[in-house]
Every structure is written in structure tokens, then in C-alpha cells.
Image (cartoon, rainbow, N blue to C red; front, side):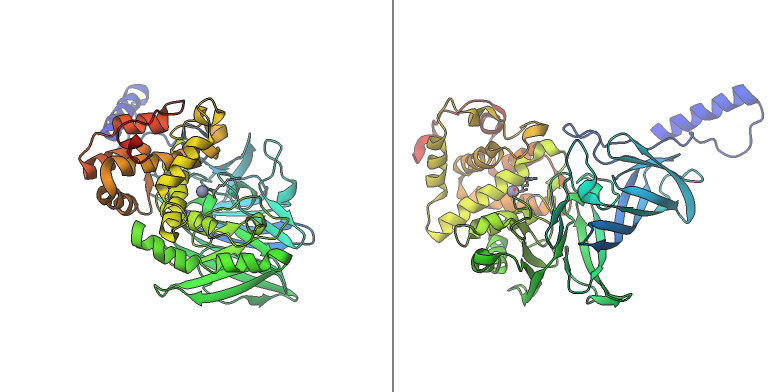
Length: 478
Ligand code: ARG
Ligand code: ZN
């Protein structure tokens, strides 16, 4: 309807202005794609005007120099007539081709790479964008930092929300998921781990180099695509559901090696238990990567294969972080945030999964963990000033998003009862599988399943500063 009106208006203009009107139906002029998707926290993350179906990332990496070079091929579909479009990327670009034709490329402030095809692209047209590039990612700074982690024996491309800019050009927002092929050639004796499965074994390439290939066949957000390169022991197994389990352990864990293995080895067992609560595991493979001590200082729910900081094993084995990152496979990876302000849908849920695990193990009920957390932070603590439902762009990983976030889910459980609560969780995972969700949509679903008005509960626990008073149901168990 809108389109027809615009076309009619354009035709009218032509008639008046030129007189020489051809028989062809008039079209609106192709225009540039936008440099962002309008995320309320990160307006310039992602780009508008196209939608990516697949990334084929084919690289070469040398741990000795941190030099990364190669080609990413993006298969996308135009969502409007485009004169040009943007990609999010920071490394130096050598060339760009669109559908086989050399295209113009220019860096525009921040992380924007502007691509101008030789001829405009029409709506619904398939786009094959081939970007050749090279760089030293640890030396490329954005806002004073690099999210790429160089280690003594390799590198980790693992971070949230920003990581892809340092290793492949993309439409960098969880709203635009795609399937991935990732392959990296490295010196013989170096391991490369990424998401999904290996469509082929590591193959010799040139003299002294080996190419490793990985493939993700389910929709995957750009920030959940990772690389771990270095000295790793790779251990494969089969999960209770028949899926391949591929775990990787840095050979430099030292004292922590045993605890790392004792923890990451429980991945399939944890996923099996979580499947009983959240519904069928949404992906095609399982696993975990135990990063070296000079790697990242956090864990990340990289799809099918979370990556764990060595710090998690300092005090022995730790199944809780395995439970947390794998709960994200449902909440974060399969059901992703529609905007980053919805981060509670990831962190609140993964944190509450830890409470459920604790309850299951007889190590403290969710109620006891709720009471403990409530008492841990006095009413005047800063903790209560961060809103889990809208923490702000600079606080998306604030402790309150996790802990008060889990408390909010526990309050929901008390308000609707166990029967409804344990129907809401799998229903949420199923109804938004491989897609995106908002807190408002989750509230609507919870209200529909429970038959209760939950407005006050969501407002109090997610959107109101200060420590909530415990009254009624909330106080019942305390
Ligand atoms: N989603 C991750 C987790 O909860 C947190 C990532 C935090 N990001 C960071 N750069 N520290 O496990
Ligand atoms: Zn998390």
C-alpha cells in the first residue's frame, strides 16, 4: 500500500517535470541502506536495507604476528532498493565485490564500512558480497579498546556485544541471524575451534599450514560466532540425545586443568537436564572451550560451544557456569534479544537456571537463594538502583541484571505457581525459537498462560528502583 503510493507520486512528478514518460512503471529512486538498526542502546549496531542468510568466513591466521587475512562472503537479500549499504567492520579492506562486480568501499566513522555496488540493487534481489581484508586485530582500537584477545599461543574472538568488527564484516545485531561457515588456516600444530561441527577434518594447505573448518546450520547471532586459536586438546563424545559433543581444553591450564575438565565434561549432562525444563535443545552440537589463563576474564554462551575463562576453575570444578552458559543456548542464543535493552531475557534466565540447578542438587533451594540475595544487598545499596529491565547501555552486564533478574523470575514463579511457571519457560523458548523477543512479549505470554495480571510484578521487579517490599506471595516463604 505504502509502496504503491510512493510509486504513484514518483510517476506524477516525472510526468509534470519531464513530459517524456516511458511506458515502464515508475520506481522510487534507490536509496542508501541505514548505518544502524535503531537499537535503543546501540543505534548504529547492525545496518538496514538487507538481511543476511549466510556468512562464509575463510581466513588465515598466524599466532606469531597476530596477522589475520582472508575473505568473507555474505549471502544476503535486499529489503529495499539500495544505492549503497553498510557493513560493520574495522580491519583494512582490500576489495569488495557485489554479485561479481567490483564495488566501491569506504570507511565511515566508527565501525561503518560503506559499500557502493556498481549498479543499484533492487528489493528482494539476492546479494553476494565478497570482502577481502587483512589486519592485526589486537592493534585495531575502537573507542580505545580491542575486543580481540591475543594470547601467548593464539587468540580468542569472544566478546559481547562487540566482537565481529575485529574479524569479519557483518550486519552486527542479533535481529539479523544467519548460518555460518568459518574456516581458518593456521600453522601446523595449532588448533582452531569455532561453532557447530567440522564439515571436514583439518586439511593440509600449502607447506606447513592446516585449514580447519566449522559449520553452524541453525540461525546464529553475529556476537555468538567465535574463534579460539592456540594449543588445545580436543575431546569428542556423543551426548545422550545422540549429538556430537566437542570440547576443547587449553594445554596451558596448569593446576586448573583437572577442574576445567571435570566441569566442561558435564556439558552434555547439564544440557540433558536443561532440556527437561526448557524443552528440546535447539542446536545441532554441544561442547565447551576452556580458554588459557591469559585469555578472557568471563564466560560467553557462544552458540553450541560456550567459552570459559580459566578463572572459573581457580577454586575447583564449577558446574554452575556450565549451567549458566548452556541455559543461554535457549535464552539468548535461540531466543535472542530484539534490542539490547532486553538483556534480562538472557542474563536473568541463565542466572535463574543456576538456582534451579542448586535446588535440584540439594545445595539450596531457589527460595533460599532468593532470600540470601535479598539480604545480601541492604535497601540503600547501589545494587537496587539498576533496573534489570532497562539497565542502560553501559550497564547491560551489571550484577543486578543477573541477580535481581533471577529474583524477578523467582517472584514470577511464586505468583503463578510451579505448574504455570514450568509451562511458561519452554513455551517462551519454543514460541520464539531462532528468533527474537522482548520483555513485554514475555510478560504477555506469562499472563496468557497463568491467567494473571502481572503488570505490578514486572514493574516492581524489573522497572522500579529500590529494594521491593516483600508482601503477599513474595513474603510467604521467607
Ligand atoms: N553473556 C555473558 C555471560 O553472562 C557475559 C558477557 C560479558 N561480556 C564481557 N565482555 N565481559 O556469561
Ligand atoms: Zn550470562
